[in-house]
Amino acid sequence: MAELILTEEEKAAALWSDLSDEALGKLVKKKIAFLTAAADQLDRTTTFAAALLLCCSAAENNSKSMMFDIEGVTQGHREFGDWTVKVEKRTHPPEIKPGSLVVYMGATYEAVGYGDMPGTFDIVLYPDCMAGDRFRNVPASALKLTSKSGE
Image (tube, rainbow, N blue to C red; front, side):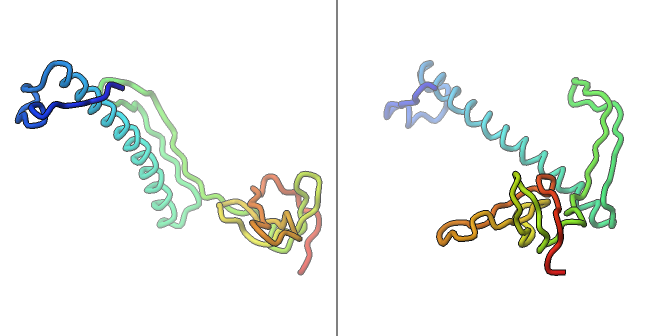
């Protein structure tokens, strides 16, 4: 990207039109890059906020899922067609509970608790580890129940 270096006279200019063509071009390029980055972040934030609103709406209605059929989606003059939007609450498989013995990558471990991330379990991967994290968050789909202990 062009580096914007203004002279003292250009810094004191009250209007952009008072800048040299070169300085004005560099300023416009810099502002366009800033606005593009901000717009990209806003798009992601808006999308996540919309998804969060749908999840909260389903939860407030004591529903595990919601589905919306939206026909003729357009934005400006662009047509995007017909869409189905679905939100669904993820749950832990009922057969795996903390204390269950599970197979993960060919070895047997104890699922000691629910993981930090939804749909995961903590397994003791390194039982003798004194430093660092002894546990590993593993998606329930990667675990196979072998037998239950502690029941």
